[in-house]
Image (cartoon, rainbow, N blue to C red):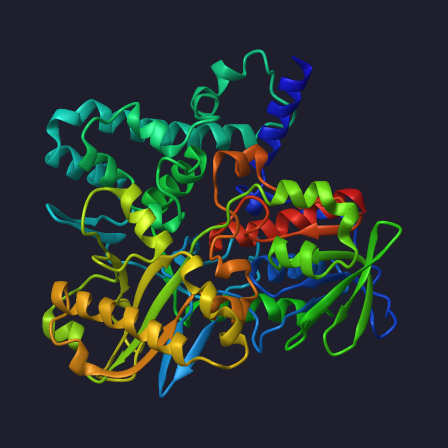
Length: 543
């Protein structure tokens, strides 16, 4: 009984973490000394300038500590970056995110009120999802209307639709109630006080949906955002689908003017303005360990930096298998780590069009998910194995969001597909040796399939309007972010690695921590920024 109670308490602490970052009381944390240290000595070193690493570094700098963020790429942000080609600017990953409101403007990044110059615009509709028999524009910030749409299509499932959304709302309320407690809840009355939270433990999203819904097509429509989480309902933690999806439906989806790079740059600027350092083109080769304690890092160009704490925003695999020499003492931890499944990667086609094709055709949506059927499990397998016989796709059209997104009179498009890494492993060695003939042929083949599919289903005349094309594969993800197997979500949010079982910030090595998608609470812009803050707060409590 004691062991069970301990796990429940640990579960509660994990749930609170990452969902109330705006409520952090900074006054309880110690302040840095502000004293000038030796040139290569810092309070904390952060490996990787993804959003998790940047938010963690910004938190330390805000408190007067001296952080050093080391990033292998030429710009900060990880997946939250942009790149330019022939006058077009492409966003690497961002489709939609949450945004806080103040003074009537959506310009608040939770946890960082000092960032006020990034305006987030709402999507005209949250997203559009197309299936063979259904074409639904999910309304922005109107969950009741969405429920009504589903009831209209499936009147016989009226009660079940109400039930599943009631559970999603109840779970959100339970978490909010729990995070407001000033002491541990009474575990004897926990199932009564937090009924929705209690019954979601140990269940997949598929389990939750199956308890209410009978019609397979309706199950699929309710789970249509599965691609945001990278797993089908049968594998995905119920908590990790229900909570963010409910928040998305209620709070809305937004996109920043200036794209994702502006978020990354703003966080990096906080670090620099407060006396910290963000060093680019600086790949970490080794985490220095002394007496089972992290004491600093060595970069590939031979620089050595020391610190009291080291935080890795890199992938867990790179951290423990590549950066720590003689890691036999981590054998048990690594064996456990290897039991977790790694998320899918992505295949993306970035297009710059020489005319405003979207306006000509008359499509007003900003984000579209096109599906060829109602079997999510089969769709997942097709993505995992790179089966391109009849693919679905995601499409973003952000020229419909604000003027000036593209060069005047032109369009910027992104076609995206989740994809496994196995298909690309045979090209890996040659790719990193610069031998890319076969690789280029294969990525063009897949890109052509997707372009033809979009042209046939939504954008007639697309191919002849293409001015710029850039293709990103799982190997591209590895090259620019260093993420293991090109993963875009870190570890999968399965039942054995989500919520209370998710890999935490602390590691078996003293003073070495993890922040970002490979740690808790998980992936996504609205999770990795809180992850960095949560990691900072955990270290502060032990300072």
